[in-house]
Image 1: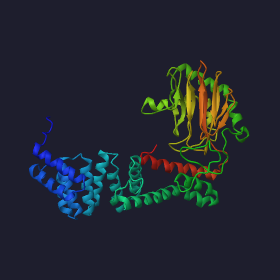
Image 2: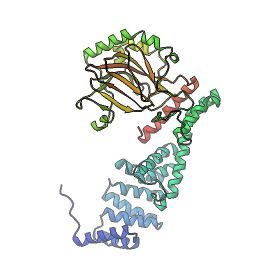
Image 3: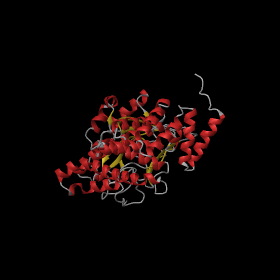
Length: 437
């Protein structure tokens, strides 16, 4: 297929003059120039769009729609055209048609936050709030990530009030959505039982500041107030540790069989590029590996892996592991190759703690949490809060393996655990809809 011919020089000069006039705010002049352009070239989408939006600004809805529908026939995949036509349909009261065009615009250009903003506004007008809320949230977030809509100066005058109204709508909508997960528990157990959960939600939503007991603690996702905060926890708080440790030899035998088979281990870190992996993992001469044999990953039970390790699985099934759909637990044999160094990083929430059961620990291997080093001892568990900055290394010539599992923070009550399970699930559902990881 031949490329479209370039406009003749005279026509191109008119197009350039029209663009210049529009950019300088001389709209009437730009409109006249684009009218001449369309007289010479009736199927130029850029000119049809400009003229259509000028007509719409004058409340001439039908002529605007006619011009913009012509533009769409010329450029059916152009997100700008689809957005403009959606706005015109909305002005005409054709709201379902407006949704169709605006949704098509963001489908073709997912980062086009202005089109997404207008889509959210129409959905709100249709009282489809469950759809409008995530679209508004995503539009606002994407705009602000690009430095737009952060202040009055970075928001076009005509959008300032709608953007402020959308921010209020999002704040109120997210609060109502997430609080809805807590409300049934509040009705069952009483307001006092949910007080700390509600405080955690208010911190998450930015409605109140987090008061961290220790400045070294910084959860990436959810901070739960008024529970013990320390890098490492005393063994006495976890009476089930002894039962787990008693099975060390049997669990290690299952691990050794897996290592001999060289099957079932997969990278712990999953990113789109090696550069991201290097933010978390380093090694000798660039060679390093952090792999896992997962019993659970992101809350999903790996039945095949569990079946290969019946003793380990049987023990795990007796422990107070955090279980939140699509989130927790993470349970695995964690393998760190010789020379590998897991760089300092932080966990997502202090509502759960991390337990290591060391199974194969050569010399010169250690864990550091909150600046405090811990040297693993085979068969003896260590429990820590990974919302403190932590790292681990293997400076030996042999592989290091520990069993890792997530359990609830012991200061949480049973009603709080139930509420957090529901709340985190609802937050996760919403974040998935808006593309937040």
